[in-house]
Image 1 (cartoon, rainbow, N blue to C red):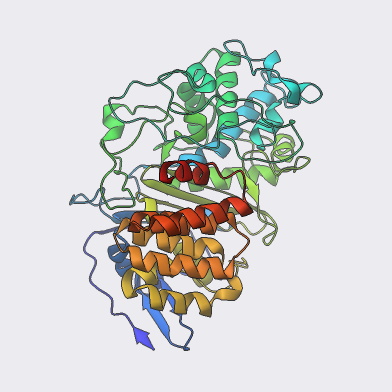
Image 2 (cartoon, helix red, strand yellow; image 1 turned 90 degrees about the vertical axis):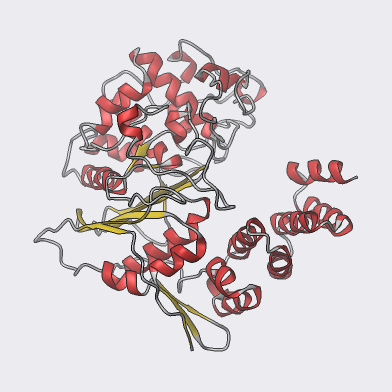
Length: 496
């Protein structure tokens, strides 16, 4: 057994929110001491404390709120507001929620449906005033509707948004939707028949944003403040972009994969509905609890049980409105998010009343959030299927190198995913450990030989290493499995 000793972590802040109805003891001390026990193929185990995992992976801050029986059981914040700073985070420090903005927005949209301002199944062009979804051959029979926008089945393009640097010229929502300067994304257009399948579209949520403002005549951030945030007690949350000075003082700064701070500390997202919410895990927990209780008919703060039936009813060829379900865990509604330098996660079960919200100010924060959620859930005795033992190939790679990371991967291979090795390789590349990244990517190709994505990653690593021949070969292999891989096409043109 390899035992990794715990180091003292001096930048820790915590707030316990106690309730006499909470059955489980506070699990955070045990989580802090042992965040993860990661098996190796030889039967030994690597143990990491939370402080150790954060320090090793260069994550400045992480904050979470655990929910037990529909109440916030405990909230904790660890670390500092930015790389190189000494200011400790607290449970009221703000992070960008990124795509977790979408279910909060969906709640606001359904509130407008409830008031008769919007409808779920009519053509959105009937409600839009300042812009129209351009019709084409895909909309001849089926139309873009609000229900389809919220469930990502509307057929619209543009997956997500990179945001805008502080001080850069920002587009209007209409310019974003048309892809007109200074917008930095393509036009939002119908690219397949609405209702025929699900394809994630931040562009569609931006249409939702504009429609909500058009029918109310209110700025989106003010509409969401009055309709959702204040009624749900989300006192530390706002959709304002950019932030007012007073609120900006309590924000954390985003951290890129290479360990540097996002220029200007964070990007600005005029695509507020899709990515613009600034909040805390505690506020997201309040939102999750109110949503679960409304689903059960126990609350009517913003939406009643009738509207919740609409939100949680799966649409044809898609999922729920605003949230995603989890087939392994009945009752769960969930969403995660990633903006430049920020990552977020919300998991809530309306049957058990248990859940967790986690936020971090680092591009490399996915794995840490998953480990923390897994550990808190296990310690709290949740009946939740996390998909087998905790996996953290990325963490083992950072601390112990590619060979031991592969040993961990083999030990958990029955529950592993191609993203485990891909994420580890991406982090190693960002740290300049190119040869180790190539070793992980080559194993990924062996295990997942029909995935175009793994060849694309291996090709990029070879390109970074200066091996043009291997890069070209693997980009071609990627295209063989995924002819629509635009990145591979662009890179081949550049190489050839």
